[in-house]
Amino acid sequence: MNIPIPSWLRRHDLWVLLLLILVFAGLARWAGSRQAADEAQRLRELARPGDILMISSETCVFCKRARLWLDEAAVPYRECLIERDAACLAEYQARGGRGTPTFVVRGHTLLGFDRQRMLTLLGTR
Image (cartoon, rainbow, N blue to C red; front, side, top):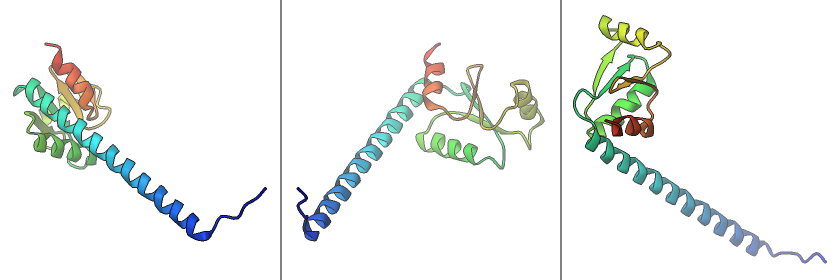
């Protein structure tokens, strides 16, 4: 048996669905920002000056994002640019030179900005 559904009810269902999507998207965003804040706090607690070196490039968008995040989180790190610093370029090449940003975290090479991996490396003294 096929009972027709009035158009006002179908529109109502769409609004309810849209509201649920917005609520869940907001919760996911909040959870993500909470996780980022927790990671920032842990990185600040574990990182000491000299623990983190970011080898970057002037044209690297991912380097810019990592730099902004680290600066906003007040995580101590040092940065060098492969285009401006011969020693930086040599370090980059010695570590495989596969892409930027390349992080050196207490002597360990980390390709890309992976906060969880960085926390793991900093947590093992």
